Amino acid sequence: MLDDAGLQALREAARLSPDNLPLRRHLAEQLLAKGYLADAETEFRAALMLAPKDADITAGLAEAFVRQSAHGAALSALEPFLAAPGYPPRMGVLAARALLGEGETGRAAQRYHEAVSRDPSVADPELAARLTIPAPSTPAYAPPPGPAYATPADAPSGAEVEKSKMNFADVAGMEAVKESLRVKLLLPIQQPDLFAAYGKRAGGGVLMYGPPGAGKTHLARAAAGELGAAFVNVGLADILDMYVGSSERNLRATFDLARRNRPCVLFFDEVDALAARRSDMRQAHTRQLVNQFLAELDGVDPNANEGVLVLAATNAPWYIDVAFRRPGRFDQLVFVPPPDAAARAAILRILCRDKPLAEMDFDAVARVTDFFVGADLKGLVDRAVEVKLQQSISAGRPIPMTTNDLLAAAQGTRPTAVREWLATARNYVLHANESGAWDELMPWIKRKW
Ligand code: ADP
Image (cartoon, rainbow, N blue to C red; front, side, top):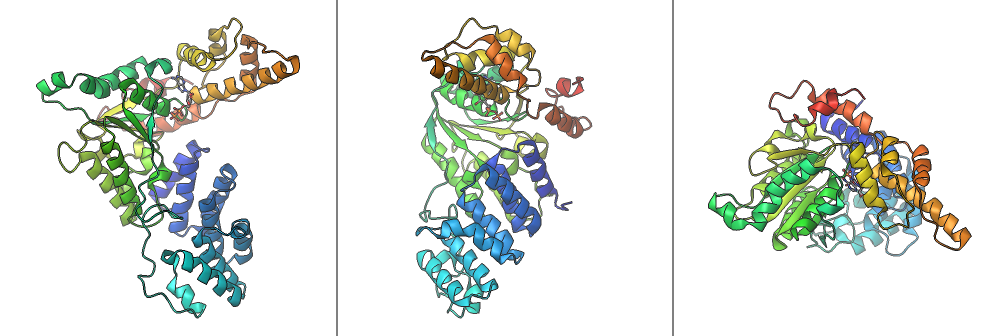
Protein backbone atom coordinates (compact mmCIF):
# COMPACT_ATOMS: atom_id res chain seq x y z
CA MET A 1 0.00 0.00 0.00
CA LEU A 2 1.40 3.38 -0.92
CA ASP A 3 1.51 5.87 1.92
CA ASP A 4 1.46 8.84 -0.42
CA ALA A 5 -2.00 10.28 -1.08
CA GLY A 6 -0.99 11.97 -4.35
CA LEU A 7 0.35 8.69 -5.69
CA GLN A 8 -2.70 6.81 -4.56
CA ALA A 9 -4.87 9.32 -6.34
CA LEU A 10 -2.85 8.89 -9.47
CA ARG A 11 -3.00 5.12 -9.22
CA GLU A 12 -6.76 5.26 -8.81
CA ALA A 13 -7.00 7.53 -11.86
CA ALA A 14 -4.88 5.04 -13.83
CA ARG A 15 -7.10 2.21 -12.69
CA LEU A 16 -10.11 4.07 -14.04
CA SER A 17 -8.37 4.83 -17.34
CA PRO A 18 -6.21 1.75 -17.91
CA ASP A 19 -5.54 2.65 -21.54
CA ASN A 20 -4.49 6.21 -20.85
CA LEU A 21 -0.83 6.10 -21.75
CA PRO A 22 0.24 9.57 -20.52
CA LEU A 23 -1.41 8.90 -17.18
CA ARG A 24 0.21 5.48 -16.75
CA ARG A 25 3.54 6.88 -17.77
CA HIS A 26 3.21 9.71 -15.27
CA LEU A 27 2.27 7.29 -12.51
CA ALA A 28 5.29 5.12 -13.30
CA GLU A 29 7.59 8.14 -13.31
CA GLN A 30 6.23 9.42 -10.02
CA LEU A 31 6.67 5.99 -8.44
CA LEU A 32 10.24 5.96 -9.68
CA ALA A 33 10.90 9.52 -8.48
CA LYS A 34 9.64 8.62 -5.02
CA GLY A 35 11.62 5.42 -4.83
CA TYR A 36 8.81 2.84 -5.07
CA LEU A 37 11.02 0.85 -7.38
CA ALA A 38 9.12 -2.42 -7.62
CA ASP A 39 5.82 -0.61 -8.18
CA ALA A 40 7.49 1.65 -10.74
CA GLU A 41 8.78 -1.41 -12.56
CA THR A 42 5.27 -2.91 -12.71
CA GLU A 43 3.79 0.35 -14.00
CA PHE A 44 6.48 0.88 -16.63
CA ARG A 45 5.88 -2.67 -17.85
CA ALA A 46 2.15 -1.96 -18.10
CA ALA A 47 2.87 1.26 -20.01
CA LEU A 48 5.15 -0.65 -22.37
CA MET A 49 2.29 -2.98 -23.21
CA LEU A 50 0.47 0.10 -24.51
CA ALA A 51 3.49 1.59 -26.29
CA PRO A 52 5.99 -1.22 -26.85
CA LYS A 53 8.73 0.82 -28.52
CA ASP A 54 8.58 3.95 -26.42
CA ALA A 55 12.07 5.17 -25.51
CA ASP A 56 11.05 7.20 -22.43
CA ILE A 57 9.18 4.30 -20.90
CA THR A 58 11.97 1.85 -21.64
CA ALA A 59 14.46 4.22 -20.04
CA GLY A 60 12.21 4.49 -16.99
CA LEU A 61 11.97 0.71 -16.72
CA ALA A 62 15.73 0.41 -17.10
CA GLU A 63 16.27 2.94 -14.35
CA ALA A 64 13.92 1.03 -12.05
CA PHE A 65 16.00 -2.08 -12.78
CA VAL A 66 19.34 -0.37 -12.24
CA ARG A 67 18.24 1.06 -8.93
CA GLN A 68 17.17 -2.41 -7.82
CA SER A 69 20.58 -3.71 -8.96
CA ALA A 70 18.93 -5.81 -11.68
CA HIS A 71 21.71 -4.87 -14.08
CA GLY A 72 21.19 -7.66 -16.59
CA ALA A 73 17.48 -6.88 -16.90
CA ALA A 74 18.32 -3.21 -17.43
CA LEU A 75 20.78 -4.01 -20.19
CA SER A 76 18.39 -6.30 -22.02
CA ALA A 77 15.64 -3.64 -21.85
CA LEU A 78 18.03 -1.03 -23.28
CA GLU A 79 19.69 -3.23 -25.86
CA PRO A 80 17.31 -2.71 -28.81
CA PHE A 81 17.75 1.05 -28.50
CA LEU A 82 21.49 1.07 -27.90
CA ALA A 83 22.04 -0.78 -31.15
CA ALA A 84 20.92 2.29 -33.12
CA PRO A 85 23.39 5.18 -33.44
CA GLY A 86 21.02 7.97 -32.32
CA TYR A 87 19.94 6.36 -29.04
CA PRO A 88 18.79 8.72 -26.27
CA PRO A 89 21.85 9.76 -24.23
CA ARG A 90 20.04 9.09 -20.94
CA MET A 91 19.97 5.45 -22.00
CA GLY A 92 23.71 5.48 -22.53
CA VAL A 93 24.24 6.65 -18.94
CA LEU A 94 21.84 4.01 -17.61
CA ALA A 95 23.67 1.36 -19.62
CA ALA A 96 26.95 2.62 -18.14
CA ARG A 97 25.55 2.21 -14.62
CA ALA A 98 24.33 -1.28 -15.42
CA LEU A 99 27.63 -2.28 -17.05
CA LEU A 100 29.52 -0.97 -14.05
CA GLY A 101 27.25 -3.05 -11.83
CA GLU A 102 28.19 -6.10 -13.91
CA GLY A 103 31.86 -5.30 -13.41
CA GLU A 104 32.46 -4.17 -17.00
CA THR A 105 34.16 -0.90 -16.18
CA GLY A 106 35.81 -0.44 -19.58
CA ARG A 107 32.59 -0.80 -21.58
CA ALA A 108 30.74 1.30 -18.99
CA ALA A 109 33.24 4.13 -19.39
CA GLN A 110 32.94 3.94 -23.16
CA ARG A 111 29.13 4.16 -23.04
CA TYR A 112 29.21 6.97 -20.54
CA HIS A 113 31.69 9.01 -22.51
CA GLU A 114 29.76 8.57 -25.75
CA ALA A 115 26.46 9.62 -24.13
CA VAL A 116 27.85 12.70 -22.40
CA SER A 117 29.69 13.86 -25.52
CA ARG A 118 26.32 13.94 -27.29
CA ASP A 119 24.42 15.58 -24.45
CA PRO A 120 26.46 17.08 -21.58
CA SER A 121 23.31 17.59 -19.51
CA VAL A 122 23.07 13.85 -18.80
CA ALA A 123 26.43 13.88 -17.01
CA ASP A 124 26.48 12.17 -13.63
CA PRO A 125 29.56 13.26 -11.70
CA GLU A 126 29.24 10.51 -9.12
CA LEU A 127 29.13 7.81 -11.78
CA ALA A 128 31.93 9.54 -13.69
CA ALA A 129 34.09 9.42 -10.58
CA ARG A 130 33.51 5.68 -10.25
CA LEU A 131 34.51 5.29 -13.88
CA THR A 132 37.55 7.47 -13.19
CA ILE A 133 36.50 10.04 -15.73
CA PRO A 134 36.96 13.68 -14.68
CA ALA A 135 33.59 15.36 -14.18
CA PRO A 136 32.83 18.08 -16.72
CA SER A 137 33.42 21.64 -15.63
CA THR A 138 30.09 22.81 -17.08
CA PRO A 139 27.29 22.76 -14.49
CA ALA A 140 26.80 19.08 -13.84
CA TYR A 141 23.25 17.78 -13.77
CA ALA A 142 21.83 21.07 -14.95
CA PRO A 143 18.21 20.19 -15.69
CA PRO A 144 17.73 20.44 -19.45
CA PRO A 145 14.66 22.45 -20.34
CA GLY A 146 11.85 20.80 -22.27
CA PRO A 147 11.14 17.11 -22.75
CA ALA A 148 13.86 14.70 -21.84
CA TYR A 149 15.37 13.65 -25.13
CA ALA A 150 16.94 15.31 -28.10
CA THR A 151 14.90 18.46 -27.82
CA PRO A 152 16.36 21.85 -28.61
CA ALA A 153 17.05 23.84 -25.47
CA ASP A 154 14.36 26.41 -26.13
CA ALA A 155 11.75 23.93 -27.29
CA PRO A 156 8.18 24.85 -26.43
CA SER A 157 5.85 22.30 -24.92
CA GLY A 158 4.68 19.41 -27.12
CA ALA A 159 1.18 20.80 -27.67
CA GLU A 160 0.21 21.88 -31.16
CA VAL A 161 -2.40 24.18 -32.66
CA GLU A 162 -5.20 22.44 -34.54
CA LYS A 163 -7.99 23.76 -36.65
CA SER A 164 -11.04 21.77 -35.58
CA LYS A 165 -13.25 20.56 -38.41
CA MET A 166 -16.07 19.61 -36.07
CA ASN A 167 -18.82 21.59 -34.47
CA PHE A 168 -21.71 20.93 -32.11
CA ALA A 169 -23.64 19.13 -34.85
CA ASP A 170 -21.05 16.36 -34.54
CA VAL A 171 -21.85 15.90 -30.88
CA ALA A 172 -24.97 13.87 -30.23
CA GLY A 173 -27.20 14.80 -27.31
CA MET A 174 -25.69 16.69 -24.38
CA GLU A 175 -27.93 19.66 -25.07
CA ALA A 176 -27.60 21.09 -21.57
CA VAL A 177 -23.82 20.81 -21.70
CA LYS A 178 -23.66 22.45 -25.12
CA GLU A 179 -25.88 25.25 -23.93
CA SER A 180 -23.72 26.07 -20.95
CA LEU A 181 -20.60 26.05 -23.13
CA ARG A 182 -22.34 28.30 -25.61
CA VAL A 183 -23.14 30.88 -22.95
CA LYS A 184 -19.78 30.67 -21.28
CA LEU A 185 -17.50 30.37 -24.26
CA LEU A 186 -19.15 31.17 -27.52
CA LEU A 187 -21.47 34.09 -26.95
CA PRO A 188 -18.86 36.39 -25.40
CA ILE A 189 -16.72 36.00 -28.50
CA GLN A 190 -19.56 36.15 -30.97
CA GLN A 191 -21.13 39.18 -29.30
CA PRO A 192 -18.31 41.02 -27.53
CA ASP A 193 -20.12 44.37 -27.42
CA LEU A 194 -23.03 42.97 -25.50
CA PHE A 195 -20.76 41.36 -22.98
CA ALA A 196 -18.57 44.44 -22.66
CA ALA A 197 -21.68 46.49 -21.92
CA TYR A 198 -22.20 44.36 -18.83
CA GLY A 199 -18.53 44.47 -17.90
CA LYS A 200 -18.02 40.81 -18.76
CA ARG A 201 -15.14 39.58 -20.86
CA ALA A 202 -14.57 36.47 -22.89
CA GLY A 203 -12.43 33.91 -21.20
CA GLY A 204 -12.33 31.85 -18.09
CA GLY A 205 -12.61 28.17 -17.77
CA VAL A 206 -14.97 25.24 -17.67
CA LEU A 207 -14.15 21.96 -16.02
CA MET A 208 -15.88 18.97 -17.57
CA TYR A 209 -16.04 15.77 -15.59
CA GLY A 210 -17.56 12.38 -16.13
CA PRO A 211 -16.72 8.76 -16.90
CA PRO A 212 -13.94 8.05 -19.36
CA GLY A 213 -15.05 7.87 -22.98
CA ALA A 214 -18.24 9.90 -22.47
CA GLY A 215 -17.16 12.54 -24.97
CA LYS A 216 -15.33 15.29 -23.09
CA THR A 217 -12.49 15.60 -25.60
CA HIS A 218 -14.91 15.28 -28.48
CA LEU A 219 -17.00 18.10 -27.05
CA ALA A 220 -14.01 20.38 -26.49
CA ARG A 221 -12.85 19.90 -30.07
CA ALA A 222 -16.37 20.59 -31.33
CA ALA A 223 -16.60 23.74 -29.18
CA ALA A 224 -13.45 25.09 -30.86
CA GLY A 225 -14.91 24.36 -34.30
CA GLU A 226 -18.26 25.87 -33.38
CA LEU A 227 -16.47 29.05 -32.43
CA GLY A 228 -14.03 29.09 -35.33
CA ALA A 229 -11.29 29.20 -32.72
CA ALA A 230 -7.94 27.48 -32.77
CA PHE A 231 -7.76 24.30 -30.69
CA VAL A 232 -4.83 23.35 -28.52
CA ASN A 233 -5.17 19.89 -27.05
CA VAL A 234 -2.85 19.44 -24.10
CA GLY A 235 -2.14 15.97 -22.80
CA LEU A 236 -0.22 15.26 -19.64
CA ALA A 237 2.78 14.13 -21.63
CA ASP A 238 3.04 17.61 -23.17
CA ILE A 239 3.53 19.17 -19.76
CA LEU A 240 4.98 16.75 -17.29
CA ASP A 241 8.68 16.38 -17.32
CA MET A 242 10.96 14.49 -15.04
CA TYR A 243 13.20 17.49 -14.50
CA VAL A 244 12.33 19.97 -11.81
CA GLY A 245 11.24 23.25 -13.33
CA SER A 246 10.68 21.95 -16.85
CA SER A 247 7.00 21.14 -16.34
CA GLU A 248 6.34 24.73 -15.25
CA ARG A 249 8.13 26.01 -18.35
CA ASN A 250 6.09 23.67 -20.56
CA LEU A 251 2.89 24.91 -18.98
CA ARG A 252 3.80 28.53 -19.55
CA ALA A 253 4.79 27.79 -23.16
CA THR A 254 1.44 26.09 -23.72
CA PHE A 255 -0.53 29.07 -22.42
CA ASP A 256 1.64 31.39 -24.51
CA LEU A 257 0.91 29.26 -27.58
CA ALA A 258 -2.82 29.66 -26.95
CA ARG A 259 -2.44 33.41 -26.35
CA ARG A 260 -0.62 33.83 -29.65
CA ASN A 261 -3.44 32.03 -31.45
CA ARG A 262 -6.50 33.65 -29.91
CA PRO A 263 -9.37 33.13 -30.12
CA CYS A 264 -8.35 29.77 -28.90
CA VAL A 265 -9.80 26.87 -26.97
CA LEU A 266 -7.06 25.50 -24.73
CA PHE A 267 -8.03 22.00 -23.65
CA PHE A 268 -6.40 20.14 -20.76
CA ASP A 269 -7.17 16.45 -20.62
CA GLU A 270 -6.67 14.53 -17.34
CA VAL A 271 -6.34 17.85 -15.60
CA ASP A 272 -6.51 16.22 -12.16
CA ALA A 273 -2.81 15.46 -12.42
CA LEU A 274 -1.98 19.15 -12.95
CA ALA A 275 -4.54 20.57 -10.59
CA ALA A 276 -4.47 18.11 -7.72
CA ARG A 277 -5.10 19.17 -4.18
CA ARG A 278 -1.90 20.64 -2.85
CA SER A 279 -2.54 19.15 0.55
CA ASP A 280 -2.18 15.71 -1.08
CA MET A 281 1.30 16.48 -2.26
CA ARG A 282 4.48 15.92 -0.40
CA GLN A 283 6.78 17.05 -3.16
CA ALA A 284 7.36 20.78 -3.22
CA HIS A 285 7.92 20.82 -6.97
CA THR A 286 4.54 19.21 -7.72
CA ARG A 287 2.92 21.92 -5.61
CA GLN A 288 4.90 24.45 -7.60
CA LEU A 289 3.36 23.12 -10.82
CA VAL A 290 -0.14 23.52 -9.39
CA ASN A 291 0.70 27.07 -8.33
CA GLN A 292 2.04 27.82 -11.79
CA PHE A 293 -1.19 26.53 -13.32
CA LEU A 294 -3.21 28.86 -11.09
CA ALA A 295 -0.96 31.77 -12.03
CA GLU A 296 -1.37 31.05 -15.74
CA LEU A 297 -5.14 30.85 -15.39
CA ASP A 298 -5.17 34.22 -13.64
CA GLY A 299 -2.77 35.78 -16.15
CA VAL A 300 -0.19 38.44 -15.37
CA ASP A 301 -2.63 41.18 -16.28
CA PRO A 302 -6.41 41.22 -16.67
CA ASN A 303 -6.17 40.98 -20.45
CA ALA A 304 -3.59 38.23 -20.56
CA ASN A 305 -6.10 35.47 -21.25
CA GLU A 306 -8.63 37.50 -23.20
CA GLY A 307 -10.01 35.24 -25.90
CA VAL A 308 -8.37 32.15 -24.44
CA LEU A 309 -11.03 29.73 -23.33
CA VAL A 310 -9.72 27.09 -21.05
CA LEU A 311 -11.56 23.80 -21.06
CA ALA A 312 -10.40 20.97 -18.90
CA ALA A 313 -11.53 17.40 -18.48
CA THR A 314 -11.16 14.93 -15.69
CA ASN A 315 -12.50 11.55 -14.68
CA ALA A 316 -11.64 12.32 -11.07
CA PRO A 317 -12.91 15.82 -10.24
CA TRP A 318 -12.79 15.16 -6.50
CA TYR A 319 -9.01 15.38 -6.60
CA ILE A 320 -9.03 18.92 -7.96
CA ASP A 321 -7.82 21.63 -5.58
CA VAL A 322 -10.73 23.92 -4.68
CA ALA A 323 -8.56 26.92 -5.56
CA PHE A 324 -9.21 26.01 -9.20
CA ARG A 325 -12.91 26.61 -8.79
CA ARG A 326 -12.62 30.29 -7.88
CA PRO A 327 -14.07 32.91 -10.23
CA GLY A 328 -12.08 33.44 -13.40
CA ARG A 329 -10.55 29.98 -13.14
CA PHE A 330 -12.62 26.83 -13.63
CA ASP A 331 -15.62 28.53 -12.16
CA GLN A 332 -18.04 26.25 -13.94
CA LEU A 333 -18.25 22.53 -13.37
CA VAL A 334 -20.03 20.62 -16.10
CA PHE A 335 -20.98 16.98 -15.78
CA VAL A 336 -20.68 15.05 -19.04
CA PRO A 337 -22.98 12.12 -18.32
CA PRO A 338 -23.00 8.64 -19.77
CA PRO A 339 -25.43 8.75 -22.72
CA ASP A 340 -29.01 7.58 -22.20
CA ALA A 341 -30.73 5.44 -24.85
CA ALA A 342 -31.77 8.40 -27.01
CA ALA A 343 -28.25 9.85 -26.86
CA ARG A 344 -26.75 6.47 -27.70
CA ALA A 345 -28.94 6.21 -30.79
CA ALA A 346 -27.86 9.70 -31.81
CA ILE A 347 -24.18 8.88 -31.27
CA LEU A 348 -24.54 5.71 -33.35
CA ARG A 349 -26.19 7.73 -36.11
CA ILE A 350 -23.25 10.14 -36.17
CA LEU A 351 -20.68 7.36 -36.06
CA CYS A 352 -22.34 5.53 -38.99
CA ARG A 353 -23.20 8.48 -41.13
CA ASP A 354 -20.47 8.07 -43.78
CA LYS A 355 -20.84 4.30 -44.12
CA PRO A 356 -22.86 2.32 -46.67
CA LEU A 357 -26.01 1.52 -44.72
CA ALA A 358 -29.18 -0.50 -45.18
CA GLU A 359 -32.18 0.78 -43.31
CA MET A 360 -31.04 1.08 -39.69
CA ASP A 361 -32.87 0.82 -36.41
CA PHE A 362 -30.44 2.69 -34.18
CA ASP A 363 -32.96 2.69 -31.33
CA ALA A 364 -32.86 -1.11 -31.23
CA VAL A 365 -29.07 -1.00 -30.88
CA ALA A 366 -29.34 1.73 -28.25
CA ARG A 367 -31.67 -0.50 -26.22
CA VAL A 368 -29.10 -3.28 -25.90
CA THR A 369 -26.15 -1.02 -25.13
CA ASP A 370 -26.92 0.07 -21.59
CA PHE A 371 -23.81 1.50 -19.89
CA PHE A 372 -22.03 2.05 -23.20
CA VAL A 373 -20.33 5.44 -23.50
CA GLY A 374 -19.37 7.15 -26.77
CA ALA A 375 -15.97 5.48 -26.86
CA ASP A 376 -17.60 2.02 -26.44
CA LEU A 377 -20.06 2.75 -29.24
CA LYS A 378 -17.22 3.85 -31.48
CA GLY A 379 -15.45 0.56 -30.79
CA LEU A 380 -18.63 -1.33 -31.57
CA VAL A 381 -19.13 0.45 -34.91
CA ASP A 382 -15.46 -0.05 -35.82
CA ARG A 383 -15.81 -3.78 -35.23
CA ALA A 384 -19.00 -4.05 -37.29
CA VAL A 385 -17.34 -2.11 -40.11
CA GLU A 386 -14.37 -4.47 -40.11
CA VAL A 387 -16.61 -7.51 -40.50
CA LYS A 388 -18.56 -5.79 -43.27
CA LEU A 389 -15.40 -4.82 -45.07
CA GLN A 390 -14.19 -8.41 -45.14
CA GLN A 391 -17.54 -9.60 -46.47
CA SER A 392 -17.44 -6.87 -49.12
CA ILE A 393 -13.93 -7.85 -50.16
CA SER A 394 -15.01 -11.48 -50.58
CA ALA A 395 -18.12 -10.42 -52.50
CA GLY A 396 -16.22 -7.90 -54.62
CA ARG A 397 -18.79 -5.18 -53.96
CA PRO A 398 -19.76 -2.98 -50.98
CA ILE A 399 -22.36 -4.72 -48.81
CA PRO A 400 -24.32 -2.20 -46.72
CA MET A 401 -24.27 -2.49 -42.96
CA THR A 402 -27.46 -3.57 -41.22
CA THR A 403 -28.97 -3.27 -37.77
CA ASN A 404 -28.07 -6.92 -37.17
CA ASP A 405 -24.40 -6.21 -37.82
CA LEU A 406 -24.42 -3.64 -35.03
CA LEU A 407 -26.41 -5.93 -32.74
CA ALA A 408 -23.92 -8.73 -33.35
CA ALA A 409 -21.00 -6.41 -32.58
CA ALA A 410 -22.78 -5.25 -29.42
CA GLN A 411 -23.07 -8.83 -28.22
CA GLY A 412 -19.33 -9.29 -28.26
CA THR A 413 -18.54 -5.99 -26.55
CA ARG A 414 -18.38 -5.24 -22.86
CA PRO A 415 -18.85 -1.60 -21.93
CA THR A 416 -15.99 0.08 -20.15
CA ALA A 417 -15.99 1.52 -16.73
CA VAL A 418 -19.24 3.51 -16.37
CA ARG A 419 -20.68 1.45 -13.55
CA GLU A 420 -17.36 1.35 -11.80
CA TRP A 421 -16.93 5.08 -12.29
CA LEU A 422 -20.34 5.83 -10.82
CA ALA A 423 -19.56 3.65 -7.80
CA THR A 424 -16.33 5.53 -7.22
CA ALA A 425 -18.10 8.85 -7.70
CA ARG A 426 -20.71 7.81 -5.17
CA ASN A 427 -18.01 7.14 -2.56
CA TYR A 428 -16.46 10.52 -3.08
CA VAL A 429 -19.37 12.88 -3.40
CA LEU A 430 -22.33 11.43 -1.54
CA HIS A 431 -21.24 12.88 1.78
CA ALA A 432 -19.37 15.86 0.44
CA ASN A 433 -21.83 17.96 -1.46
CA GLU A 434 -22.31 20.82 0.99
CA SER A 435 -21.35 23.40 -1.59
CA GLY A 436 -23.69 21.89 -4.17
CA ALA A 437 -20.74 21.37 -6.53
CA TRP A 438 -21.94 17.87 -7.43
CA ASP A 439 -25.63 18.64 -7.87
CA GLU A 440 -25.62 17.58 -11.51
CA LEU A 441 -24.07 14.25 -10.62
CA MET A 442 -26.42 13.42 -7.74
CA PRO A 443 -29.35 11.98 -9.73
CA TRP A 444 -26.93 9.62 -11.47
CA ILE A 445 -25.25 8.24 -8.42
CA LYS A 446 -28.49 7.84 -6.49
CA ARG A 447 -30.01 5.80 -9.30
CA LYS A 448 -29.94 2.01 -9.08
CA TRP A 449 -27.51 0.58 -11.63
P1 ADP B 1 -13.49 11.39 -23.07
O1 ADP B 1 -12.64 12.56 -23.45
O2 ADP B 1 -14.68 11.77 -22.22
O3 ADP B 1 -12.72 10.26 -22.44
P2 ADP B 1 -13.82 11.10 -25.90
O4 ADP B 1 -14.22 12.49 -26.22
O5 ADP B 1 -12.42 10.72 -26.21
O6 ADP B 1 -14.14 10.77 -24.39
O7 ADP B 1 -14.86 10.11 -26.63
C1 ADP B 1 -14.44 8.99 -27.32
C2 ADP B 1 -15.09 8.89 -28.68
O8 ADP B 1 -16.49 8.63 -28.54
C3 ADP B 1 -15.00 10.17 -29.49
O9 ADP B 1 -13.84 10.21 -30.27
C4 ADP B 1 -16.25 10.13 -30.36
O10 ADP B 1 -16.00 9.41 -31.55
C5 ADP B 1 -17.23 9.31 -29.55
N1 ADP B 1 -18.24 10.13 -28.88
C6 ADP B 1 -18.33 10.34 -27.55
N2 ADP B 1 -19.41 11.10 -27.26
C7 ADP B 1 -19.97 11.42 -28.43
C8 ADP B 1 -21.13 12.20 -28.79
N3 ADP B 1 -21.90 12.79 -27.87
N4 ADP B 1 -21.43 12.30 -30.10
C9 ADP B 1 -20.69 11.68 -31.02
N5 ADP B 1 -19.59 10.94 -30.75
C10 ADP B 1 -19.25 10.79 -29.48
